[in-house]
Length: 389
Image 1 (cartoon, rainbow, N blue to C red):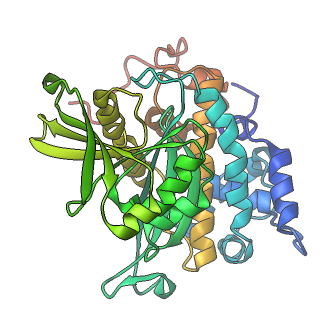
Image 2 (image 1 turned 180 degrees about the horizontal axis):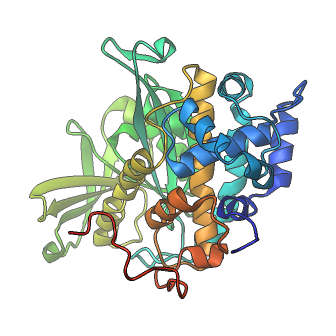
């Protein structure tokens, strides 16, 4: 029998607790708190994410079944449904948002050499948003449409990893283009985005900061071709042009020349028109960069399927944002542990293993080995297995 720490405790040891304390002190999270601290709340909610708990009652029932082990998990306060619900309602969600921002640099450092298919010296980001649907009856404060209540999660994704670099939660009515005002462009980096972010005045400020963007043109886009570049049509590139804007306000917002690339996607049988301020990369590379934007869509799909951000444990805005940010922290933690242990398995497999073995006292560097043999004498060959016929 392994007398060491549980797998959950070993996983939590990879978190920088000093950074968490700074976040708590910044927002006075433990002010007048006697028993159930912000750290206790974080551990309970992280446990819920890793073990796929569906409700507060589900979380408390599972933790109370392991009452003697809670102290060794790091949970010092008594766990009850009302205490956890009150903490989610009252503790400032900015604590966990700031803690996620503290984990992001470490995750990006570990994944900076991750291969992703293109040989570019500069960082490539994908910018997009997703809608998180909420129940109209339980979340009246999140009104989006007459028949839909929701929040919007804006994400700037580093395509090496992929690791979310910037996340921001807004009301669902907020337009995507306002996210450009919250970002600080990185010199030499590429930002790939869809037509929802096409605002020439804002994009020109990014050009002045030395950043590159790749986006798609709208159908009513008006321009004047000033120069045509040679295009290899066998690559799908139909034309490569340097253009100037025609309409008064767009020309005033973006007075510099732009590059327009018309590309035929043979796989989907459709024509795409790209706009960029980069004139050095080959046109097929620009098209490939935009195709890689789909990684952010896959990221949204992944977190909605494998993290608890579709069913919520509380109904207030603070409780919802707390759960989302702790889910992001959990994602980053598992990604960091995967690199620290040099594991070849993907994050999905790690989460599945963790969901059924959090209380086991297995060394964490052995828990994720697929070829880990059963101990001798651990199974009776004469014992029938369930569902054996």
